[in-house]
Amino acid sequence: MNMLVQSYLQEKLSKGAVHVTLIDPVRQAPEAAGRLAETAQEVGSDMIFVGGSSRVTQRVLSETADAVKEKTSIPVLFFPTGTDSICLNLDAFLFLSLLNSRNSQFISGTQSRVSSVLKRLTVEVLAIGYILIEPGMKLGEIGEAELVARDDFWQAIGYALTAQYMGMSYVFLEAGNGAAQPVPAGMVRAVKREINVPLIVGGGIRTAIDARRVRQAGADIVVTGTVIETAGYRERLRSILSALKD
Image (tube, rainbow, N blue to C red; front, side, top):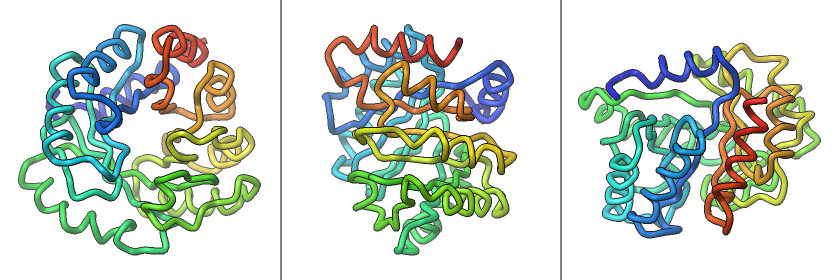
């Protein structure tokens, strides 16, 4: 795909919820990652994110990205998470600004060092206001985040509107990869009510019930990661996709 991810997303969103499968390169060999991505596409996932770990080497990241691209025809995007390793040969780059970080490097510093490269290589960029909600998991530690409390809907709304007013194209509420529970449905609903850009929700979504709750609350794009790393993941993922498409 060439500079078409935004258009692809808009078309998908006009028909309903979008599902994204997150593949962490450090959790399996590149060949296995390719098979997981192939299965995700077969089941009905709309998009793949590659990233999610701070421990990935450039070699493993590149090999995983190549393996995933080889096995799929849906868009594959790079999901950076505070690592020096970077992948620019995918369909688009998630330009994440962690708005509730205590460290400006995660808000704009790291981004400033890669932005010129992205422009010169004509990489498609999706500008995203990234907001970490309790428990935040490892991402919260890496990003030095002042986590938004699960019952503090107003703070979540404030960050989400900040993203919108700064001109970002998407808002991403993230509970953290491996979180015991997703972002509360009430928070998703409250944020969605206040913003005019698509809302992404991820972290802790392991079942069809979880997926249905965040979707019904207003999530436009739902990201799942851990579920694909467990036994019986094909049927679990299928049930999640079914819940989103109902």
